[in-house]
Length: 370
Ligand code: ZN
Image 1 (spheres, rainbow, N blue to C red):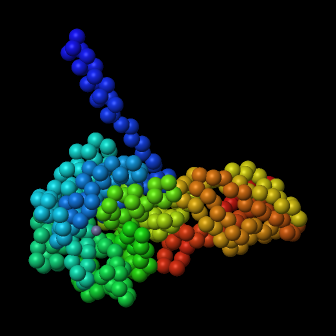
Image 2: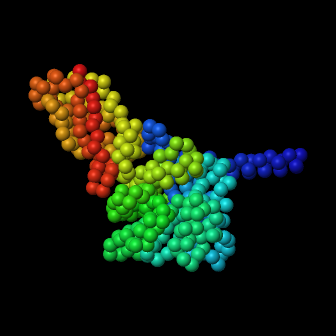
Image 3: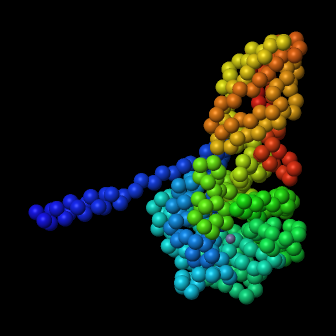
């Protein structure tokens, strides 16, 4: 009897300790031919200068709707090494079983941490971080590349390393010419680097946005009204190899604050897949005001600035298609020509979708009139 009672108490105790966790998906749609994977390839743990255990990074990633992460502890900077004595592969090894269990793709990575130039570089998809502990920074990068790694330049405009101006150095040209440098962070933590965006387009580098999180993620991004910076990877499968192939082929866009930046060939289909015109027929006539209902099923508020109205009507110049809402856009017939318009074409610029330095995505919303 006593034994049963103890068993009963134990089972109550155990079940009281079982938690339910919930995941919030990032709603940015897939595009024709590709899945849109949400990734963060730059973060730290106690194994370098971070404040959390590696499994915490996996839990955070799962809760915040990510598909893949890379834990990238510094090779050369390990302020906790008196307390945490281990090698450079350890944070990955600790996190991996939980990542597998939760379906988070964990990519082995590390951060080569040097003064400028060349500054800090992330190497992901490597096989052994310990072999990157080299005196010569170029040799460390070459070793990463030889392991099959993908290498990108972290926070090029970090004020602590480039206080006056964000410069591109000859060392970066050397890495680029050797086929080692593959990508660049245009957004890191809370900072945007327009120069890096420009270089990504000029030099064919893959765009990356990272949290570079050191503390628990909630300390930096309030889950209720913000999100961590994310690299959107356009991959054919939800697999590590597919992500690597996409990175090597510049198939990314970056999602930071209320913005997306990337090639038009990715941002245009994201916009189209997010937005749907609900109004079947506007039936607009001269001197009449009507509305077109537009639904946005993504997490992004699209900020539209009117360019041209079509023949025979004018439309609202400033429109925000709010995330997960339906918006009414006002149109007004201003000539008899409107009767000959079977389709109303509303031309806008989406000011928070950046397709090149200083350039935003141009779109046309088309609604049937008659
Ligand atoms: Zn870092």
